[in-house]
Image (cartoon, rainbow, N blue to C red; front, side):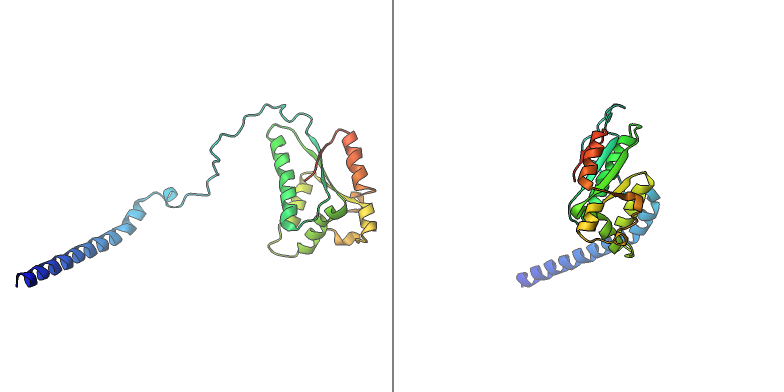
Length: 193
């Protein structure tokens, strides 16, 4: 009999504990909206915060990029929209770095060989709602970046001029590699992505 009484008492204690826990949970749930309402709006959902890499941004002198204002980006590689966006992102970052010191960039993108794919891919995707490459090209052109097209590549690969995104006749140069050499002789820095 004492065993039966003991089991009954344990069962009653367990049920009482469950009931108390359930009541506490209900009270907590009821209080939650009131607590959320009391929080300031900015604490509810923070705006997208700038990423902190754990090191302060380097301090640079105004003349840090002296001589780097003139740049050629020589594009000769095959790619897709993502790869070409990476190349153009590097051009944007280059310009932004110089802008921060008050220097303006004279940037020329020279495309030959497989590099003409940059403008071909942009033309192929320009009607896609989610395409970013045509917009990035337009943005850089607005900032003064020139996009030069190799005539040797057009004829050698039988590429029609109208297959290229936003290309103009004045963008065509005789030879991409010769143009890169010519511009270097004029003081342009050569970058190869």
